[in-house]
Length: 240
Length: 240
DNA sequence: CGGAGCGTTGATAGAAGTCAATTGACGTGG
DNA sequence: CCACGTCAATTGACTTCTATCAACGCTCCG
Image (cartoon, rainbow over all chains, first blue to last red; front, side, top):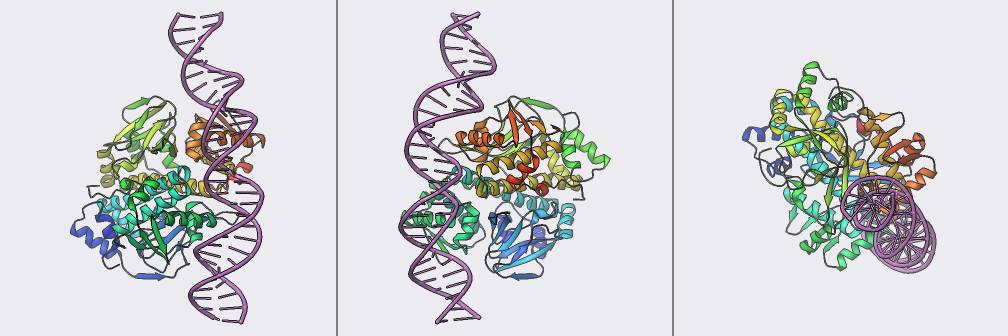
């Protein structure tokens, strides 16, 4: 978390001038620690600030009436967790810290001000929410049309590329503190099936996953199984 | 499509002043007809204008390598189909007209100009993409944690409320020109299963669906089966 | 030591997919 | 006016995938 991860995230997609970099650095005022398992934002809340992840993992989730849970997104360093609450309110889902996290709360007043004072930065923030939506669409594709193994493979491909963008990978491995229960809520599968499918991925020598550490052994194989194409992440610097 | 449907969409969520209304009306310049079955935007394209739906139905879809298809969103009058292409490019999915449509192409130059000249309108456009994302999240919840019947019920609840917002419903019924094949691509189910599940919904007297005309017979039952809560559509006028 | 959480396994049930065929509505060409 | 092709909806038989239920082992920690 040394280099500002939001800066890494944005500069992978567009050029930032030095004033914009300054504004982004100043945006991170006080940082806060959040303990694993704690809710960062609650469904129904009407936040007056948005939470920027500086380090750790978080998940957006929604509880069902029958006790089930659905995870619709995983967030990592550099992501805004609830930027949409700037314009949408109340929150229609909650966000939970999956690991100990470092976050920074950015007042909506400041963000709204950017839409007047720094339209280009405001557009880039808008862009981050558009990329969230693009990821949702891929998850929908995976949920509707891929097998359980393909779905997990897609998730791993996506998270690997995203982590790499904010310099949170080493070679082909990365830290991913997800339990199989959490993964099952994200993939829309049962824990038992997650377990067996992970074994399948391991036996095929596609991945290693031990103690929260994932290693990708066969990127092409994984990508192929997932029909993964990173275009939707828009990892190309261009004027936006 | 007589009253500007974008105006209906937006004014259901925030107050618009008269200048803003004028800008929105002028945004609709030339209208175009698109024939059912035609692609409106193609994956890989780098549009320099975004398509506003004035009348009809369209779907965002993505083709898989095995010939499968996934529909990640249905769009109706008042929706921007590819507003995200303003900041994300190239298109990571295509859009097809499900019925004959009337659309208006709005140049990106004009939309980018709004981010400088009319920040509030720009924020409202941003909001429309945030609502798209919120719908994606609900679809993910439905795909991952609801039964086939619940998933279809959720879809019908959502589309009903959205159509109502832009005055495209009459009492409890509305026009919905979706084939069962298209519905299966949207729900991530097979056509056979869609067919049987629709029969189930009909036998339970929840809906009637004949010749592209859907009638909701038991809203509470449908909503309950779908765990539908319209909060995520943000149908409350408030400053944004 | 004992419980809690997590990963794992086996057995079984149920949901949804696949394959194949039929029906009815509609449009077109002869 | 009828034969024919096409498309959408429907049905039956069968298979495959995934969920559920129940248990067990392991590790961590109070």
